[in-house]
Amino acid sequence: MVARELSAPSRRTERRWLPAGLGAAWLYAYAGVWIATLVPAVLVALVGRPWVLPVRHVLGLTLTAQRNPPPGIGHVLFSEAHNLPIVAWPLLLGLIGAHRHPLAKHVADGLLTACIIVNTLQVGAALGAYGVPLLPYLPQLPVEWGGLALGVSAWLVQRRRALTVAEGLGLLALIAGVLLCSGALETVAVPHR
Image 1 (tube, rainbow, N blue to C red):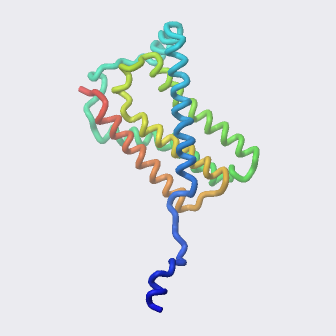
Image 2: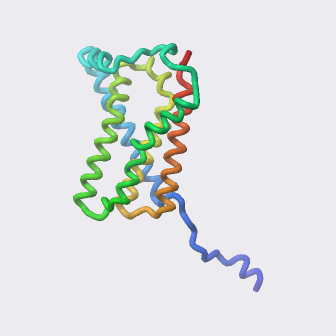
């Protein structure tokens, strides 16, 4: 009888701090963010001089280590404060009930698509215009895009069902942690004086 009690599966409900289906939604979103980045990069690179020169003029990037200050916690925290609202706002879509109405879902989808394009277009155009010399200045990009994809995947999960408070807070903490890592990479791993 004791052995049966020890081997019986626990009937307690398990609390999840991340929603089911997040992994698949994240992969889908991460692929979408990279596609949105690489399409403008390829277009600018293929068209060549007629687009490269205007993009370089508009962006005005100076790819020298002297332009980057030495690493500091202030830059990491500034990066976090700047990126967190941009990435985490899709969590709010569930709070306002956008997942309950078809029209609201389409509006939310459009807003999220616009957010992705606004955030990836400039980076993609810069990659196409500056090419390989830009890469040492973007070591954080895969991690930062991972954070952006987490925000997008939060909405993709919420389209099907509302998140619990624990899931929403867990996602917010995960997004904040990923963006903190991205900010640290951006601060420490880029060429600096």
